[in-house]
Image (cartoon, rainbow, N blue to C red):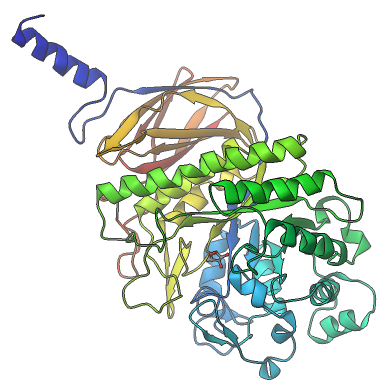
Length: 532
Ligand code: AHR
């Protein structure tokens, strides 16, 4: 055994080489290599979808203030929220729920505003649902932000006939009674509905159905709830039907996916589905107890550990889908995901209001990266939810609006929409907090239509910066620039009084001789574009 002094020198050297540096010091550079000529699947823009349920202040106040409001609006829809969302190039919005969808009767939400029936929202606080925001208002909102409509039809408490009527009302170009009613209500031209959810969480709030019972409903609804417009039955305008899928980990959920996918394989010509939904929240334990602000590094690490379970879940259900659909015709649609924390003190029960911190920005980036790595199967995802509910893009308070850290990540990732996945290789290193060890760094790459190579780089470690030394091939790189999102603390938030605590800044990226060096601050998300 060497003498004690020699052992100390070796230990110190090992600490430095292995990244055991003190807080704030950079660990050894992480080598990353990317061959920009390699092409993977398309990262569908629909992975960046949103979800707007009639829940708390998500729709009412958050989107809809009514045409007579003093808050600037266009036909009742907030101008500030529309402007913020337009910058995200939101590809699709799922509506009207969630659990709300399986108790929603579309007829309550059409016709003259003064004659709309007030109903109840039993799922979410038992509050009055005024039905002022209905089909036309939602379609107007989707149009204002430039998004596709993803409707969920009521399978739980509705009927196939009610849902079929809704689709005829929306889509037919023929002068049927329902089309005339649509015209009388202000929209002569048929609407386009590219995505249709057949129920929501039918295993729980959508009707407590067994897999077999739901399957029988799916066959019926899929047959009758059509797009009634022949011009929209082919190609890009075709309406994709999304079946209810699993809601977590374990045998209950694999049985559900097996049942639906087995039936899909054996199906007759008269029913079909193009997507299977999956819901996965980052919650750690139920009921949600983790705080959305005012937490420390232990909770940061725990939540991120939990969020990384998304990868295994997609792999598990993707493998079942591969068994019955090896050509990957059916998309796995993660149409509810995100962090679900304890409600903010003083907010109503059932409104699911939470703050949104730097941790959520890191969490969002990690999930989007997972979706991108599974882009051949995961072709759509919807974060829950868009405004004022759960992991929101924006928060509103009367006439005020604030952009959340998650918003900034979605904005920074816009170049990844419909880009081509490019594999990157790197040694992620590790970050340890107590008993939790996580990959320190995460990265994805993609190429856009103009040939720009985009890298999204996340430094999970909240105490040490990381230097990325990237070797690029397959591209003659001429310039590199980007943005970094970080903040003083893992629980830093944006508030109405201090809206820019967590805001993107220019990235520290330099390019020399085909080598790209990027410094990632602790707890940060960086997106860099390398231009040919
Ligand atoms: O997003 C909130 C709720 O979570 C949705 O209504 C439901 O589908 C899920 O359980």
